[in-house]
Length: 294
Image (cartoon, rainbow, N blue to C red; front, side, top):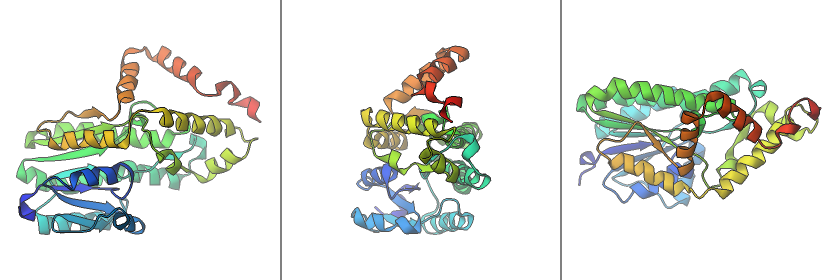
C-alpha cells in the first residue's frame, strides 16, 4: 500500500502518556502516522523503539509556535495531500488557585490546551472540506464539564476546547467532517506527577502559613489517591480514541473512562444548588481551608 493511499493521522504530544500509547497501537494499522513532540522530547521515540519509515514520520512541534504549526501542515499537504484525521492530544496542567496565576501563565495554559488545537484544526480543514471527509479528535477532560478548586485555569482551557469543538461540529457537518471530544476522568497512571505549579502556587504549597496552603495540600493528595484507585488505564482511553478513528460516524462526545459517565449524570440531573453544595462539602479537608490556615 502506497503512502498516499493510507489515511494520514496527525497526533500531537505523541512522545509520552496517552499519545505514545495511541501511536504504538496505530503503528500496526494501515495508516500514515505523523507523530509530533517538542524538540527536547523527540529522543523518547527512539527510547521506545519508534523510528521513521515510509508510513511513519517523527516531527518536532512546539504546539504553541505558529510558524512550526504552519510549516508542518504545509509539508503534510505537499507530500501526503493533507491530514485525514487530526488528534489534538498535546496539553499540560497547571495546579493553581485563581490568585496564583499570572497573565503569562494563563496565556500559556490556554494556548497549549485550547488555542493550538483550534489553530491546527483551522489549518487542516481546507483539505478536509475539499475531500468532503475527515475527523478532528480533541482530547478533553471531565475538567471540561466540572471544575475543581486549584484547577481553575486548566478547567478554563478545557471548557474552551469543549465550546469550540461543539461549534465546529455544527459548522463542518455539511462536508462530512466529524468532530469528537474524548473526555477522560481519573486515569490510573503517574500523570499527576507531571502537573505543574505556577510560581505563586509552588510557594504556597510549600509555605504552611499561606492562606491557600491547605487547598494544595489536600487537593494534591486527594487527586493522587483517586488516580491510584481508578481502574481505568491510559490503554482504555487509547482504545476509545481508536474506536472513534475507525467508526464511520462517531458522536460529538465520548466518555474516556467510566467515571466520566458518572460525573456527567451528576452534573445533568442534580439541581445546581444541591450539586455545588454536595461537591463543596465533599472536598478533602474543607474545614481546614480558609481563615484558620493563617
